[in-house]
Length: 337
Length: 169
Image (cartoon, rainbow over all chains, first blue to last red; front, side):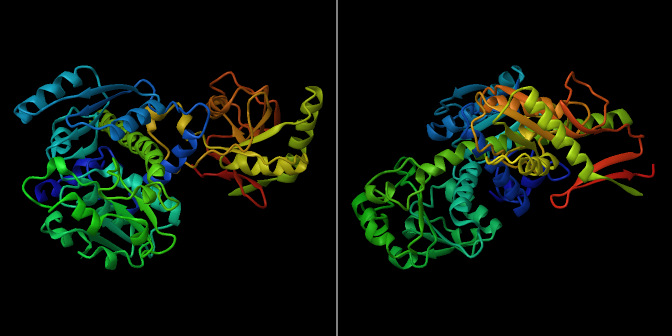
């Protein structure tokens, strides 16, 4: 993962610091993340109109390249691209047995032959979107829609937008991420975003078996006891228990997990009274969160979904804009030479 | 060198021109929309001068510009805000300066995405000519013909001051 991180900045930014791919939050500075949130704010207004569409990416082709299944992420990316007036192609590709490097290259060559302008990529292998960004034709933007256990940057940014909407700013906030951090690319991106945007404290609350070994080095405190961890919280982010990714006995039982780490009304009362409850979805009611909390007044889970469209519109238009800037500069330099 | 044009005088002319348009078109309840940033200041001023009770709208045309393929997205985009229905409304669209006409085209495209207005009156403080599209304002404060080294800029929001700058090139 460190090998990926070193080349991040050069790969996803233009020479003057504009976004041209969106692969990870590692290496992105606070002003750029704030730009993404501000641009997303403007797109929220578009989503409230009768005609929820702007002509920004008219005539561009966006390919949703999903090597791993998804409902919410794929549909919000699709809606985001359509609201930007782009043409959208959805490809669900099952990669279970194929040699991934080869099939990926071949798939890409075919899609590039269709004159695509952007690939939105989800893949079970960490680093797949980086690989594509390195090999893709110049001018084509790559947006990471979740890769392995590595990153899910648009999810983290829609979470940041939701927090900013409800809390005004990030200053002084105490935020906890609860549950299956081990398998969660969302948690990794959230920790990066929260630290870059300057919250007071990021906690992870989970049993040791569901935490990555190096978790504190990501920039967070570890709390094994949920009741102690909920104290003074402004934001609690619940994660889905990813049973499908679990190999071996990481948990005694779901019931035991719910008893210790599930969020219910009684435990939520230990946090600040205005603490908001978030969840990237899909939620498992009664496994990590009680229905009364998921549907309760402190829950902002459905706001997150709405914000997901706006954040994806922002990231897609900014990445396309960066590609435009790079091409314009390339042409100018070509003329000079 | 910076020269100051008589902004109050121009605003008076703008107001008089607007009243004349409204009378001749028999428009009794117009809604004002200003294009960010200068147009919004002017919309505020005209809203007060015309005594309209309804708040004015603010338009940011960044998502509707026709030069995305050349210059990309405006990094300082703000949300548009139209606090009224545009469907079947008589709209007064205000900007500080008109030149190519492309901003107005983008603004009209955006307005139509909110609803189909009954009519649009276009009002600009300064007309610099050099049109590239067949779009003409109905009300103009002053028509100027600038030299290549001159720039005109509205400073605001209060007080509104129109500056004519010599860039010295």
